[in-house]
Length: 156
Image (cartoon, rainbow, N blue to C red; front, side, top):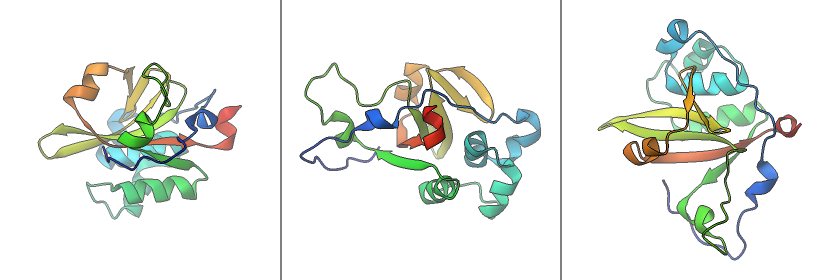
């Protein structure tokens, strides 16, 4: 995760909470070859994973830049999470980001292999599989980058 910089006022992530998240689920066996980046974007936007893969020129790697541009084209806002904007708070018992935020994150799973996941409401979505968020996965598979996602309709 990037360090970022401390600023005078902390980011108000509270205004980007989502009371509702409607993930678009596709058959995991049929679409796993599209790749985790395409599948994460598809889960969020509803677009066919293979169409997203084609836009990424069928590369295995989905860069942060590609992911965020694609989300913004679909009218999502994406706010980068970094060490400074997460820890710029008055006490250690108030967290800026909670279970009611939609989080897109890249985690390092193997020596040279990262994967894109989506988290919301104590659940994690990876390649159209859903599991409870395991705090040990955040230690054993370090977060490379993470974003709070928001779309006006997600607050309904």
